[in-house]
Amino acid sequence: MKLPIVAYGDPVLRKKAVDIIPEEQPDLKELVENMFETMYAARGVGLAAPQVGKSLRLFVIDASPFDDDEPELKDFKKVFINAQILEETGEEWPFNEGCLSIPDIREDVYRKPTVRISYYDENMQHHEDTFKGLAARVIQHEYDHIEGKLFTDKLGPLRKRLIEKRLNDISRGVVKVDYKMKFPAAKKGRS
Image 1 (cartoon, rainbow, N blue to C red):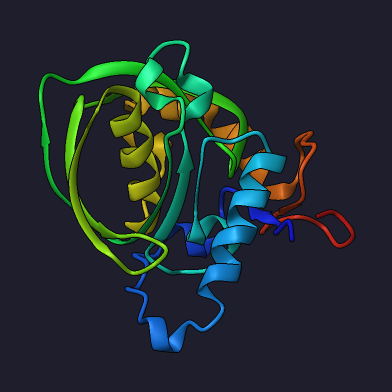
Image 2: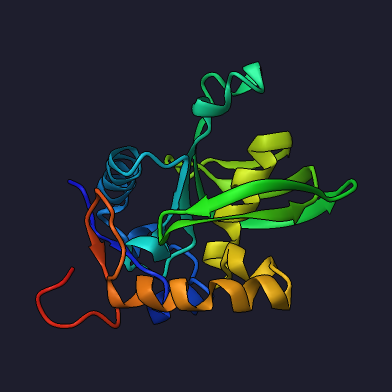
């Protein structure tokens, strides 16, 4: 089932998400499936639970669209539950990022090229892995969501001022998207 993606300005995007306790989340597998379906319908490469209105430490990734640039991403589809970044290393590099919760805005964001992360998969098996390049970048972007951060937070003051009106428009629903969204400041009837 496709879920509505919450837009910039929704308070859930600014909350630090809580750990998932499997016994308290009996619909976890269904939520993961719905998140993948939602992400694919919106043509994204990652989606975090806060983006579908759930303040949970969960995100899904399918970085295979980047396999032209990095062939090892051909089948890079993963679920990250209760993730904790242990280390980010290397010299920061820019990449033009976007976000399903902030449609029509893309900006260069600097991130470190290597990330070591501890997480559980969809079967609650624990992993500690190191990822590099675009995989690391997508993980860091989605991880920011479960920490209550957005890619726009990484922009300088001038860039933030330049896109402020567009961000407010997104919050009000004044943006064209071809996937279902919930706009926190929209007038009745627009979502």
